[in-house]
Amino acid sequence: MRLRQAQLKRRIGSVRALHQQNTSASIKFDKTDLLRVQIPHEDPLVVSLTIAECLVWRVLIDPGSSANVMPRVTFDRLEIELEKLKPTGNPLLEFDGKRVEPIGIVELTVQAAERVLTESFMVVEIYPSYNLLMGRGWIYRFQGVPSSLHQVMRCLGPDGTKNPSPSEDGGEEPPVLTTEPLHEVKIDHEKPDRTTRVGTKLTEEERLELTNFLIRNADVFAWSHSDMPGINHAVSCHSLNVDPNAKPVKQKQRRFTPERNQIIAEEVDRLLEAGFIKEV
Image (tube, rainbow, N blue to C red; front, side):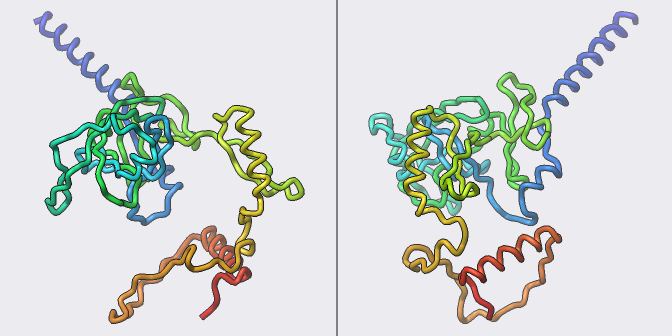
């Protein structure tokens, strides 16, 4: 009887220790994460990753995809040797079941949150809105938990515990994908408020060369709406894809907080002053 009780106590102690370990290594999202996004929204989770030592923007995190997909245009921009592209007999299936034959498969390093993994990418001749698509295989190996609602992705540390680094907002778990710290430089010495930022990982020589280049070309910067009048519609033009035969429907008015209303009013006043919009 005493032996069974001792064994039972050891089992209970082991369960408690395991529970405490799992609790300390849990990944959580809370309301403070929503301060960075506008609710409600239906945005996908798009991040930046370092692929093959190159910073790639607009990377779609898609837990529904079984493969990492790289468009051919991204493959060319990364300047990867064609010899690294290997043939593959595994086709990709679209949502409607249509087969897409990849050009090939390539293995590249993916760096995020102080962790480097070697991942396989299916190179496909497609022209999507994103530069890359990371599937659930990388998410699992990365020990990541994405949240499209909070527009953030978190992960466990390399040792399987919670990442101990503090986040920018003071939370315990930082976003997985953080941006490089930037250094502020002055573009116009006569107007100190006109500044921009450059990467802190540049050497001193590279930083000076880049800063001088920006100063020499300061006229291309637009500091306000009034600095860019008369833009040709061939350069940039936004239009609404509205069916002329559709019956107009009045939508429910969306109300914002007083802080957001003030920001919206200031932006509208700037656009009116610059002549970008007009009252109708």
